[in-house]
Image (cartoon, rainbow, N blue to C red; front, side):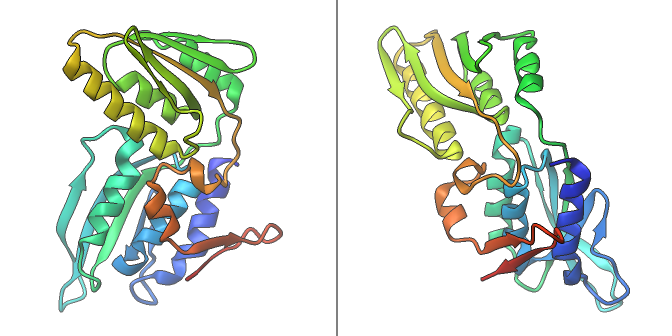
Length: 240
């Protein structure tokens, strides 16, 4: 799916949540939604594989109808964690407020392009075979692994001289990231300077992504509403 189609789906689905009849909720690349609908908006970003969530701000309407920013979430975390951090943030806000999302929208990236980008990572020793098998060698921290997750690499194994983390039975994209980063952190504490090898496979994908491929925890995905899209009109709708 191209970026323009993703933007159009977001606009059609959420523009009815405008703050008042003459106030648009959608001004590219920002979108304002009431706090109660913010989790559904974040899940939609995950399903459409929106490129990057840049910022989240909480807005309060003043008596003169102007909007005052009362809180914001700076994304100091890796880009793979932004959706989860934003969901945690909006759940703590007052239901009477609104949330402004600022984000980048990217086209779905073909496997051939992702292969080229990974092979040319200057700081990493990444090998990608013609059939999409990925081998990342001699990493010393979690950042290269997070980059693989971002590029839609399904992790299979993370290995050191003293052990292996088997991820072949962990389907969730977020859960793979969670387990792998925790395991690497534990191994680093036990053996300072340890190096890791990561095996995986580049998955083909086209948004909408299935739920296990969203970069959100399983519990956050399962508690969300169904988001349906009419394949003929392209109109999306949220149902509780």
